[in-house]
Image (cartoon, rainbow, N blue to C red; front, side, top):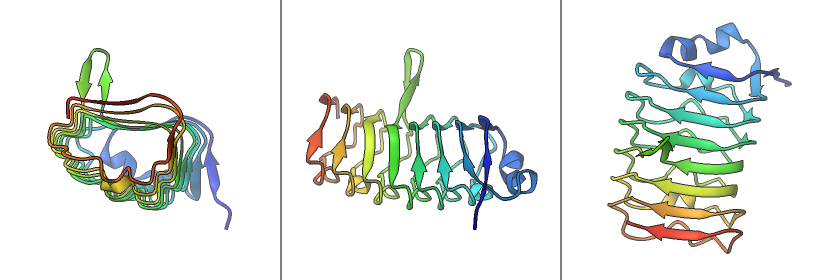
Length: 190
């Protein structure tokens, strides 16, 4: 079956917008531009389970009540970057299990200007096992992150790979399959 596309940036700022997405945009499976998911009351992403691809960036930031990414289960590719930070209750990346391609960077942790934010409750990267191709990788300031095991499918990082400020991280297991890094490889303060 052919799905429909959403040709504009998509801003989802509340649970009600996520819950009504399929009603408001029936049959939409592809977002051509960027997707912003940011809202204090967002608890789940299940209303987005028809989305298979995002052409631009997918930015999941500032969702205090979101614990996992279930609802993005059919997402297979992101043309831009995937940025996940400042999600205070996020414990799992479960829901990204079918994601195989990120054209830009994968940022687990990030910054708003000069302040660095991670995902303080995130303990591992399980849910990213099928991801094989990424532009850059940045894992920043996730204070409960203990391992990188969800990245077992990544074999090549086109640009930089940086891991810093993850105070509970004790090893780099999960990056065993990476055979080449096209840019800098930086490990600081773990």
